Image (cartoon, rainbow, N blue to C red):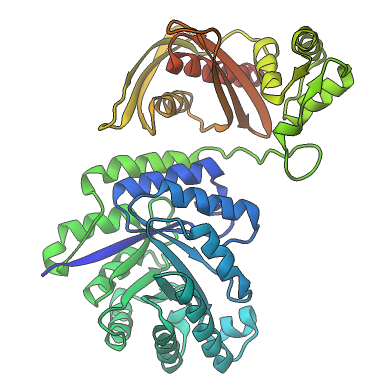
Length: 472
């Protein structure tokens, strides 16, 4: 009888300098959706350290992920962090809290500054606290490959007694060969009750991670931590393919859709290789309240340009004059001008440039039982470039198709669409704000087709970036 192997993704949990750390907020959501659709069992995130922003990411991931388990680590040195993590995670379809504790002598001493007895007490206390909040708790024995076997056994038993449903051992040093790793995993498996899953994390220091993962499966492991991009641990693509080809020998299979594996991993690679947009920092304060950026007809040129600057735009003197002139005409009629209207003004009159990319054609396929796709053709000079992309809705598919043609991943800062007039034949106006390389670019498009106006607005912003780079 075949066992089900749970495949876990640790991309967003990696340390600084690796793919997960460089992804933007939007890219992390997109990554999670791709993995969820692929059938990856568990998607792991980094712990909540920055409070509001990290909690917002976890809440957004919980909303976006439909089938996979979402796992969030807790800070073992901060007991109240468990409640904070659970508050962000609680609406996930399948939530999991992780208690990650070092169990090797060197890491216990230098990372936690605790003695072995104190570590055992900490494991029991934190796992118990998490088990009271979340139906599934994972105990991760970090650096277990270099731990004392007797102490590792005590740590595992303490975690299970406190309510851990998953126990993961880690060869962080990467110094075990497949047969050695097989023996260590089999030893832990014999120690665990039948209802507790055993997970493994393998370092790829000796380029043996994939082999060690297969050896672990044959030794009784139930969950393997992988990455679709990068070479620090088990390769998602290689592991799933090996398990698929050798399912009879391993007597195990995964729930990952092998038929979609190559295409999805390719999309994730493009996502991770795209140059990340720098964080946008407003001039005043850590958080920008766009609703508070309201101007009236009494505001002078300096006040208007100060708000425009807060919105992220860096205007030339000529563009600043045009923006203020247009603002004055609008304010004379409506008296109050809000931030979204300033965006539309900047998109309409500033950064007007010759288009590098011209829209030739686009075909959208969408419905309530199929994924939205966009077939896009753009003209650049004498050549025609085209791409086909799948997205979460027709507008998202169209935006991704542009990114694919241009070869860059832009961060969508804001997207507005409104009717210019009334009735069925009314024109739709779209305004798009994109962030790239620390700057904000806006675009505007008008069409009776909502997707068409959105696509033209996106292209308008992209063309401004392309022109500025060409001039530089």
